[in-house]
Length: 413
Ligand SMILES: Cc1cc2nc3c(=O)[nH]c(=O)nc-3n(C[C@H](O)[C@H](O)[C@H](O)COP(=O)(O)OP(=O)(O)OC[C@H]3O[C@@H](n4cnc5c(N)ncnc54)[C@H](O)[C@@H]3O)c2cc1C
Image (cartoon, protein in one colour):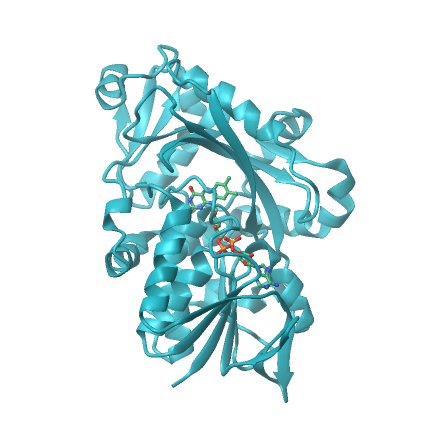
């Protein structure tokens, strides 16, 4: 029986571990923390299959200077971090060149188009069907100008075959009666369903892993244990743990371990924030997104979660919770009845590659080493698909899609 160590018990690592255990491997899931306490803890819970496009694109570039100058804007770059970020930013700009953007849209849409094919059976296997909403997401617009500013994005989603009808005010009222009168039109994304609690979802997967014989252990991996060009396990503070194969899925921290294997990856953190509002005084059936104000609202974790924003400040800087607080006022402008008396703030690290496409790949240097990271804004969305593809790679089955766009050595192209 193949022994596999999966490093990192976020939604990606937990899903891979369970999938491998289900396919007859003997799996050890290792995390320095309790499972699901990284980015997978506090995300916006959306299965956002319509958001397959790369973030770097000419329309983003045009908005970027204005956003960066606005301290409360959707993207914040801490000036002290700029020198460290520059190589990543350069790759980010290259990823936005028109020809490249088309390729990346294709690579993202191939994954997004198969999300439910993988997610629905996975959710059923772990007994989490009741955690997945039946309703999707509504995009909100205060007037035709806001809609026109988002039209390129909506058209692209439609070109790739996702059905997303326009909504007038009467239709919005029927779907979500509590919206501000300022909102005059919307677009419904019925396929962007959401989970009731992304942290509980990871815990549920881990329970299923242990129930089927998999092991879970707490411990920090310091480096890879290499023998003759092959991975033979991992080095932890308390000693070496041996394995036939090792999968690195440490989210935004994966780059630190890949460097110990002599395989650097251009992985950054796009730090994101949420405010969790308990007893919000309103009930929502859909998640909401207001593109002009760059925030999302999801009915989740027993209350309402407001989140979004990107902060480029690295892995070690302290959180700036003003970025979470500002989102609450924006949410209240969409939902006048929203009461925000009982709130808590959170920050998490999205693992971000400059081309927005995840890394789901064997190592180019060491036999037995695999990577699953860089899922950016879509880690929850892509989790079951990544687990399926990674399990195919490790167990020697042919993946159902061409894996070339997700390979590690694409950064040397
Ligand atoms: C505000 C916000 C909103 C988001 N909204 C959505 C959304 O609506 N939909 C969506 O699909 N995605 C969303 N995302 C993105 C999603 O949360 C991430 O892509 C996903 O959680 C990444 O999962 P992961 O398992 O790769 O990483 P993580 O969940 O960060 O897990 C990595 C794990 O590795 C462990 N680790 C790190 N280093 C080591 C080491 N050396 N040894 C042992 N363990 C280690 C960590 O402790 C951690 O548990 C959002 C993210 C944020 C921040």
